[in-house]
Length: 161
Image (cartoon, rainbow, N blue to C red; front, side, top):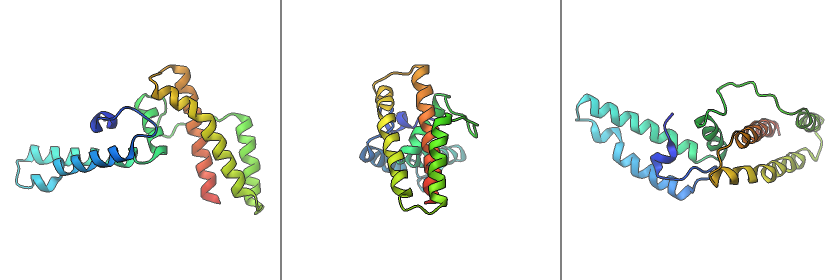
C-alpha cells in the first residue's frame, strides 16, 4: 500500500491540510501526467501511468476525512477489506431506535442522527489527537477501529434520511 502522506510530504493525520493536499496533487499531476510521456519509451510511460493513478487515489483519499480514516487504519493493518466487525450492543440498540424513528417518519429523526454524529465526533476526537501526537499503541488502534465502524454505520443511516 503506497504511503499517501509520504507522497505528499505531509504528517499522518485524520484531517490533512486541504490546501497542501490540493497543491501536492496538482504538482504531481503536472510532473507525472501521461500526456507528458506520450513519446517516451514504454517503461517511462508505464511509470507515468502508475504514478498518475497513485496520485489520483491519494487525492481522493486525503480529501475525504472518512476515506482518510479508513486508509490510515488499513495502512496499519487494523482494518481489513470486507471485515465483519461486531459493534457493541449498546451502540446497536441506539441505532435500532434511530432506524425505527426514520422508518416511522418521525420529525426528529434527522436531528437525532445529527446528535449521534456530534457525539461520535466528540468521543472520537481525543483518540485521533493521540494518533496525530505520535501514539501507535494496539489499544489506540482498537479504539480507532471501533469509531471507524461506528461512523460507517452512522453514514449508512444518513443515506436513508
